Image (cartoon, rainbow, N blue to C red; front, side, top):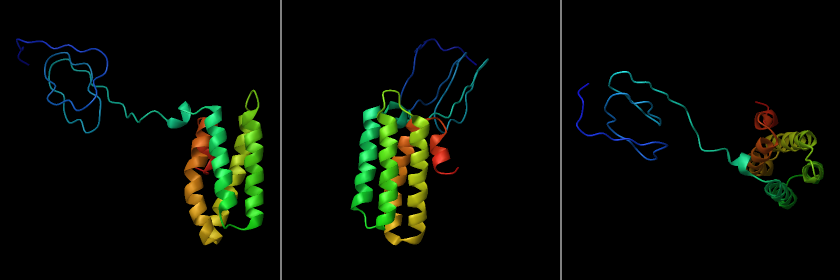
Amino acid sequence: MANNSSEFSRGGSVGGNVSNVQGDYNRAVQGDKNQAVLGDSNQVTQQNQVNADPATSLTKDDIVKLLIELQTLIQKSEIPEKTKEEATENLSDAQKAITKEEPKKNIALANLVSVAETLEKTAKTVDVGQKVWAIAKPILVKIASWLGANAGSHLLGL
């Protein structure tokens, strides 16, 4: 490749769209829809990066607020009373496990799995349950992700 008379150097990360990267010894091009890198001795590294998982930046207090939000959602819903009682009891137990000085994440996860199973089963049999499950599921996934790396998948049976 021909040498250009001008040089450009940038360390670190560059955000936004970068077009027409030319020159020798380009080290990496990252992003979506990259088509080609031309030149001599190129090393191309492509990583599928997604935004940082919001669950990893949640605090214990955030998780407690999400649990309270779920409890409120369930209590105000029109799902059967027995289902409400079972789900809110499990959420209460999960909250107790999380608010300990050293959170008992395995106990909280077990309770969240019970809540998820109960709500998912209700969603299959009661129309109102579908609405509750649709709102509750993403909240449960956030909490489960905070509990551990594979908790979200475990919670949803994946």
